[in-house]
Image 1 (cartoon, rainbow, N blue to C red):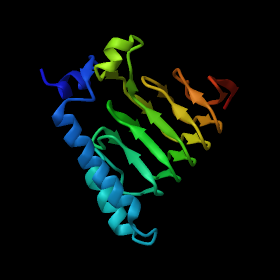
Image 2: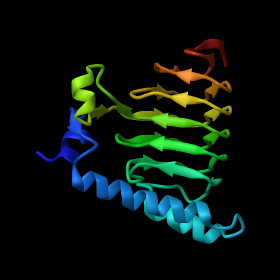
Image 3: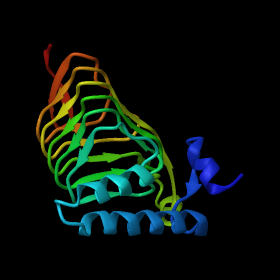
Image 4: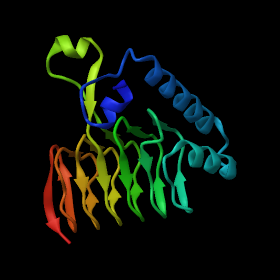
Length: 184
């Protein structure tokens, strides 16, 4: 089984030294670099790059540069997706966004998990868990979503939150760690 196949199955895999994965990340970084260097007015070119890079996109989406991700092909965005400056998605596992998702500046979605055991961690081993975001979700600025989290439909994630566990639909969450502060 390849390291990429292990990763896709949520198993411990060699993230740091596997040459195939390194090449995939470098290719993705090159595409992100190109995207981030285009003028804001070069909308068509930006859309083309993201349409090629990401696993799936809706017809109507906006990602404001800079944007960075690890692979790109593990990211799916729905219709009317908007992400403000400095979006980071570590997409070792699938990251799926529904329709009408709005992401404030400086937000991050992390699927990678590093072992607590220093020996394994120093070997470059890690595993990944997917992140799923429903429809009609709004993220305030500086939100971090951790591996394995599912956020239901019609949620608001308050600015500065660190989302460590699943969020039920129609919830407003905030804090570190994020907790429900209101039901919609």
